[in-house]
Length: 529
Image (cartoon, rainbow, N blue to C red; front, side, top):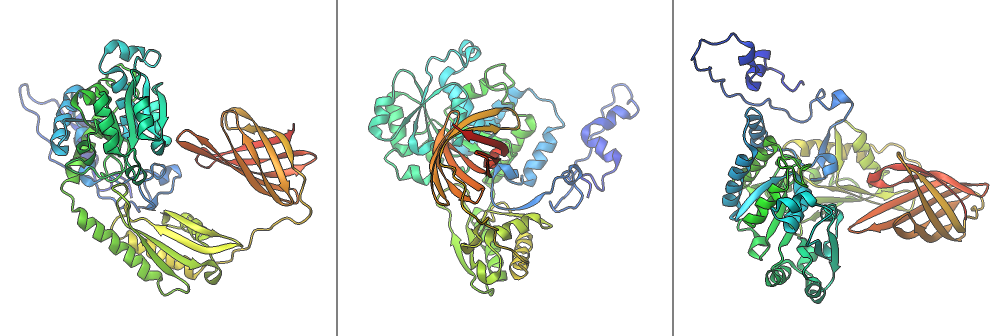
């Protein structure tokens, strides 16, 4: 189905403003005729012919959740309409953001608000605002001249998104106790960052305690609430937070590359001052009029949605899926309730014996990925031959009505028609001797990295140490004949790189491929040191 199926060329030109340019010129002084309002085309997301299939991309049914890698959420009709309407007008962006700021303040019962390019951009801009304010000279000098250039973060809040602080050039000061935080606050402290989470709530360094220390010392506190529901009154502002950041493309179902920063008016305005359209350090963080008005529409809609009804609807979808497969041998169910305001929806975990049904959870997940329509679930477990107890987890948060029937039928079809699955072949023969020190070269898509393995071996089992160019971790793995598999996890601040080296030992050398998860594959080779 084409995007503008059912629209005439004339209708399309009207909506873009081009019709008036192509039409005959009106009489002098005559007012142009107003185009009639038009509804956007209604699409299901399941059309076989669409803008993605035309470039070789297979869309999917999202039973996994608001993951950016699978494009987050599906924006609400009101959001699409607002973005469509906004695209027809020119406005002064400073005036627009002032108007949005006042409205976000009113809706959220906050001093002010701005739209950002996702919550990560809110982290970046909040950090810059706390360092440089709206001082035009400091803004131009960043990141080389900062003045206050330290951001304190509890260890429990380290995460992959605190790169938004580091990319500004700020120094992260990690603390674990209230005493350490009190001692760390000093003349160079620009901000305290904390991620809202169940772990934080149970810690001595919970948000209220942190905000009390920040207020006493005059240090702003930023709360990262990206995936949370933006309740009113805002729970984090009520605890004393200075700024709170949200994603626009998760529960709000706004534009995927949008976010919201609310709180202290002067800091919100300073954060916007540091971003596009202004020629400051955050110029790259450009938020269009379409994204801005779409986010505002999403926030407006949030406070009109029937959230209790949504929870009942999602539970009903899970009940339907459970009912479709409940009579299969060894199947049992577990309902997982949300722990906090993030990703607040129930999930269904299906358990079964892979040996009895002839298929594991990871194999079901792969079949659904390869099927039509393509379906992504939140996770499958179970591997051959030694871990046949299997599970699938379904997250209904981003599904649409009717998709629960498709998901249920697809899972039932795979579990009742598992096909043939062979146990992985384990090479026979004495394991190659790979104990010792190895110099490792990783050949990335662009560039190479020099690493080092220290390997200990007991028969087929391997352990040891993995030293990368900058980071290090512990090695584990196996050797079967000449086939080697090594795994490692190297912590990187709030992140972790997962490495799986798979290759062959031959003539005193190792070679093969390394899988780095979201960072993709690369070739590797190694020689003894």
